[in-house]
Length: 197
Image 1 (cartoon, rainbow, N blue to C red):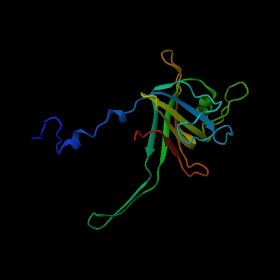
Image 2 (image 1 turned 90 degrees about the vertical axis):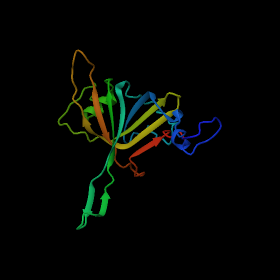
Image 3 (image 1 turned 90 degrees about the horizontal axis):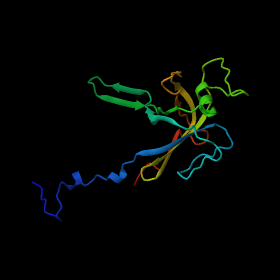
Image 4 (image 1 turned 135 degrees about the vertical axis):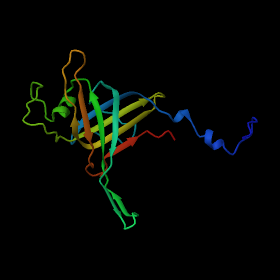
């Protein structure tokens, strides 16, 4: 039985003393910014001190927040005559980011429809392709007002949810962005300010 005398240490203290609630983070506020890749007004983040310049965020997004998802690459496993794995490899895979916009802002709609808005703010669509490249920047603030930032380089919209008009709900623009290697950096995603240590 462990010694519980005050001021003494036990050989099992490492089990119970390694927890620190200060390392737990809750994103209490956040904003998502979309820039066309190649937009000269966009300055790539290098840390949590980034500012968006004159760009506006997409505004409200759903209560589900923002989801960053790793998609593993293809797996290649070769087994020997006795079942032992003699070779194993996996390609790099990619990252996706999903957010559901609630405001009918121009950048949200252009990402959703995969086309630039016309002069009246409408959209003239000849297909459903989404080939436009985007810089996606997500910034958040935790319960201690500490910022975190995620930047997806050269991302394209890889999946979209249906847009439904219901009298019981708002219009929603469900967007999944797939990151691709950025020009010059050869990186897909940059994460800043997440570690608490």
